[in-house]
Image (cartoon, rainbow, N blue to C red):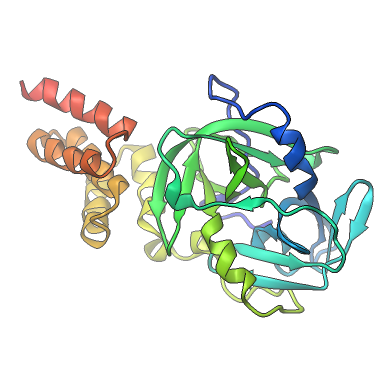
Amino acid sequence: MKHSILFAAPLFYALNATAQPPDGMVYELKPSVVKIHVINPQGHHGVGSGVVVAEDHVATNCHVVANAQGVRISKYGESFAPVGIKADWKHDLCLLKFQGLDLPAVKLGSSKQLQYEQPVFTISFPNNAKKPLTTYGEVTALYPYDNGNIIRATADFRMGGSGGPLFTDDGTLVGLVTLKSPGRNAFYYNIPVDWVKPLLEQPMQTMAEQREPPFWDVPEAQRPYFMRVVQPIQTEDWKTLEAISTAWVAEQPECAEAWYALGLAQQQLGNLESADYNLHQAIALNLVHPEANKAQSAVKERLE
């Protein structure tokens, strides 16, 4: 698997007070989650996760299978080799095509219907686990990107779960576990299921040779703004955060996270009136944005 300033990895949600799905739902979903085995060009064995999204189609991250010399999935002690691949390299989304897979497909939802603090859960094979493991969390941010929302959720990563499914608490697939930011206070991201549907209509390829890097592994200046603000937030470089988020707001004025990042920068720089305005804009776009509401309350106390 490929590592960059943001690291591809599986997803584990923190075990907290988050609501969990009804009894039996996770058990019913596990037959649709598979372990993916790859042999890289150096001859080493790697493991990822995937989920059946349509008849004979398994979705995973492209970084799991890119440039692999061999790819197989395993389920119930059996091993299956794909007959082709449908790849969206930019979005790090690949669909493996099989013949006679006979595993149930999950229900596809949309990241556009998600709300902040909505309960979610994942099923994957962290650390090459023998059985799929389940953890729980909630949505902490949504970033509009290419007709979907990148989903940030409470989580920590374990090797082996990349490509694993992210479900809402009614068992609907909304994303795939994909990457994390560096540092102790890492952010954890899932790509949206919305990208799966158009890829299903694309023609099948026979090779998994990577055609272009994923959006999270391009040069810094070409990455989405939500990635570019991570380092200045973690290092408390508020002037840089202000510059990046000002450009972000100009380009995506409908994005609550852009206004929040700008408000946060101005709050930390002591520009309280501007901070209050921009945090208000974030809340106007998302009334339940917890961080923006908290920051605006602190700003208003200082303005009084």
